[in-house]
Length: 125
Image (cartoon, rainbow, N blue to C red):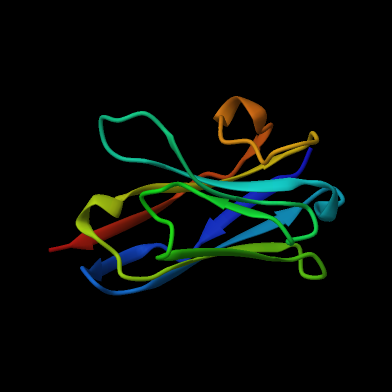
């Protein structure tokens, strides 16, 4: 298993930017596909983005495509989520997750076996 710790959340005005980071320890990070999810108050956890083990393949939810960019640095055991043009509806706790498998990048939380504790992102209008 891999241990994950998110950072970079905070309060930002609509239209602003934040960069979330996720630090991984405990196993060979480069073996894992990584995902970002978010959960707003009273709602289910939803897929935001995913990235392949090499970083060459990425996937985004339609709600964030064109505004968010996922990247990873396997040498530093880090994955990042650059969030631009933030909207109030982006307010949520953001989680990074690690998963294995082959094929298309997974969008279901069930496909990920390790999770961070989450970081709060609040976008004011």
